Length: 318
Image 1 (cartoon, one colour):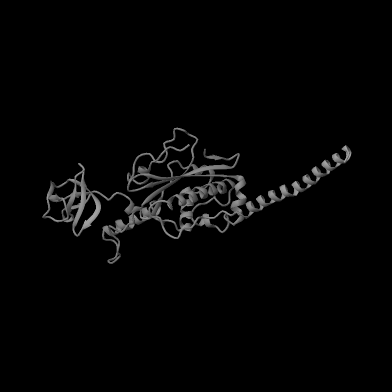
Image 2 (cartoon, one colour; image 1 turned 45 degrees about the vertical axis):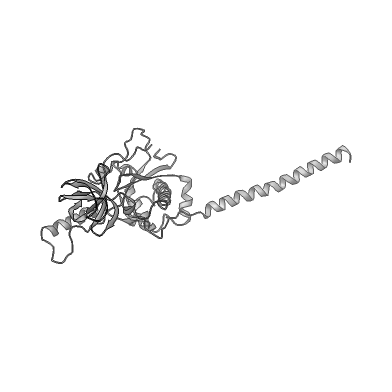
């Protein structure tokens, strides 16, 4: 083979390869686009509930300047649709319920109305939806104010937000355990204008789902849709994190402390004939371990002593 024939063979081979490569690259790009088009925004669903959840508005009402409803209403829509939590009302519904209870306690309601103390379901968790703030000195969300001093303290500073020009949103969901005040979950979500096709693919913004739940503006404004998708991402991540936590929020926590109401004794075993660990005076705080034998409970005192005490001698600490 002379040099001209060799050069012609090389050129022909290169042209053939380039012609083959072009359709392959095009096929790969089309596949990615098709996959993107087929992807739909979906609220995660659960076969079991992870506990009772109260959704509280953040302190700063940033949504007002965007003509949107509260993000708390948006998250409640996600919670109701997902079935992952029992939703308890700590907002306007709770205020109305308290008004009814006030009527009951004053004797104004009819007899047999069955409204009284000890019926309100306790929240296992408190969730606050907010923006990731650009203010590095932001103090986060004060749960004490939201729950009337139930939790207190600062729930952690957050640092992003909403960019109207670029149509982007960075949001955060903070979940606090009511019993221990531990911040269990911090889930962040990010969305841009380019994600709107993903949301529209499955009719996510149609059907009036958000408006019916009081989350106005999230389906009929561009920035509202971007924020809704960012919160969906954060909520999906939150549900995944909850799937890794213990099933029973109440049982997983430390037992509620008790206070001695009558003088008594702490024994080494559940038998009152066993050795006395120490005497107990009214007002002393004890911490149940969870072990019980009839009316006898195993407890620890504030000095680390462990023993058994008759439960008829103490009551729940207030």
